[in-house]
Length: 205
View 1 (cartoon, rainbow, N blue to C red):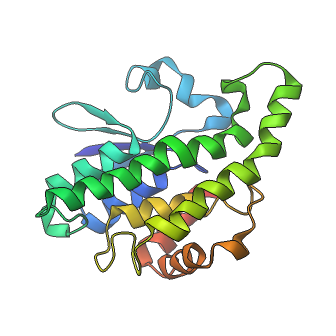
View 2 (view 1 turned 60 degrees about the vertical axis):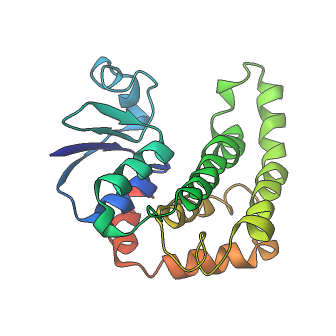
View 3 (view 1 turned 135 degrees about the vertical axis):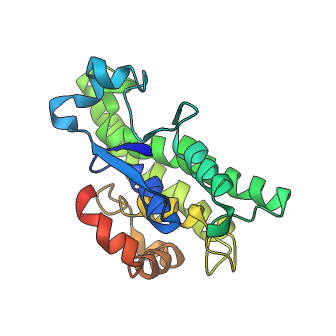
């Protein structure tokens, strides 16, 4: 059985949703970040990065949200959560998911994890002030150029939708003017009706 490591208020929600949709047996293991559980020797032996999500499989350990999402789609093609019959479309989905991972999530992290990039309190505060603009700009690109609609990939619902939903829930706390993102917000509202999301959302509050 898969072991899935997650923590509240993290992007692990996207992978958690994929696991629920697929219906594969898994053991969810919650880490308490307030007690630095992600830095414990036990967890660092699983993921030396000290972050979530992580999945322990029979073949080894996997980390990084885009990789985990694709792995689950490939292992369970019957779930139809990726356009696996079209290599180009899969690459497009991965490009979207990697943009969320490498650009959008990093912009958000400058508000809540500024210590990763600076020790100077003034520098950290300056990073926080920049987040409404940097997150807003990143999401505007998704709004205007990347969200094909009604789902990220167009007509097919995929794990990219789960990932976008996860990150779009951070917009208000990041100070982003969501009135400029009507398509992203409409997407979030539709996603919120998903029974899997209703089941899991309290775990990530």
